[in-house]
Amino acid sequence: MNPNMKFQHPRDPVQVSTECGEVLSTDSSTVTEVFSQRVGLPDSNGKRELAVSSDTLQTQAIWYKTTAGKEIQVKLDGDEIPLRPGHKITMFMGTTDHGHRAVPLAVMNHSMGQLYFVSDSLLNELGALPPRLMRLSLICIALLITFTLVWNPFAAFIAAAGYVFFRFLMHTREIKEFNRSLTLFLQNLSRSLPSVG
Image 1 (cartoon, rainbow, N blue to C red):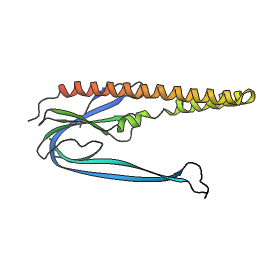
Image 2: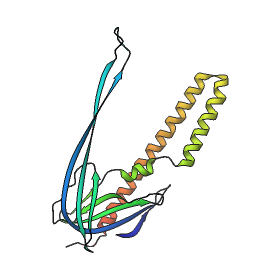
Image 3: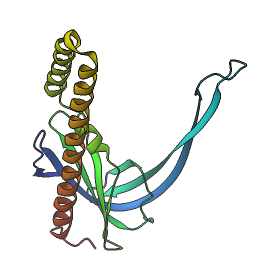
Image 4: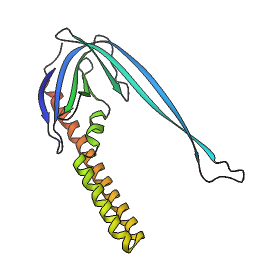
């Protein structure tokens, strides 16, 4: 891997590395999890309505051989990326300073001339509030609730709910901005890649 580029994130810089290779094989799998729970108020017999929901996760495993001859498997969550054996690719991996492992960010398929973005693995890692900010938020909420409960419990609830909603909006805006900036960064980076033949 070529650890040669850093993407600046306000909280945690992302080290971006690239590795060129040739696809050996791909395999896809889909897992569907079904959940059920009782909801609503009990009826006259004491029973509640049963709600059923499901969640589907698609995973794609890609085996590729690097230009150095090393065979690597990468598992990608999300939509399947169109790849066939023999396609020349560049894998973009990202890691943060506190990250334990590199996560796939994008795959450039040189054979098709397309850049495909992978799941939000890195966004999920960066998306969590940093521990200091989380502790500060919890302390602020606890103080706000404690002081307000003495005088007005309803005001305490409204103030705490407003604060949590405000933090949620700020956090959502930060993630959208990060995603947009990272996408532009990777697009520019893919244009500067040498042609792979």
